[in-house]
Image (cartoon, rainbow, N blue to C red; front, side, top):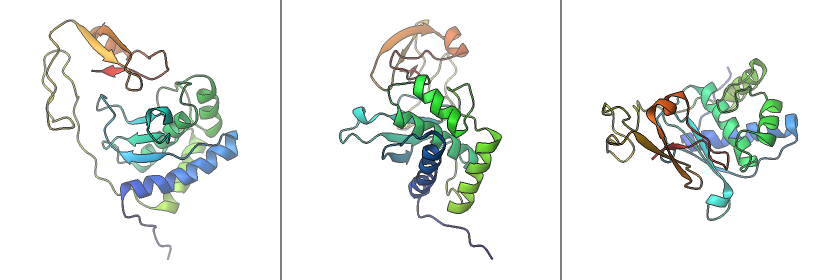
Length: 207
């Protein structure tokens, strides 16, 4: 009988997965992903549908990139392809979703659009094999609603910190870059279409 691997924590599981994904990235693209810290947590100033975030080493005191996987995720395959996406960001922190990021993402088996995270059928098989080796992702998802009110409807669930974010009273909504603080204002109409991208390449968020 084959015994299923077990881990003591979600972070331990994610780090075991990262070791396997790092090998895959190197073998398929030649890119070496630097050492990273990986945790489960809501993205900084993010929305509940932001499923992963990578902070460049330049933003961390000791220089080691930090990756956060959203606690709303529980599906093993989804967690793994998001982790792979964020690890490519860790390798190319200044590329956004262009240049070497898109080149490497394609090489390892992710598919466009690069602002999303989707594994090709072949890469999905690789991730499934990784999941089989390291065992079950021991996490129960958090049912997070939106972290901000845009049209006056309060969020039905608490956001991180236990507070519900109230609506902004002006038509122009402030969006900012979680990486460098760059700020612009736009309307709810255009946010519904898609969030703008900071000049540094990071997707901006409300706040």
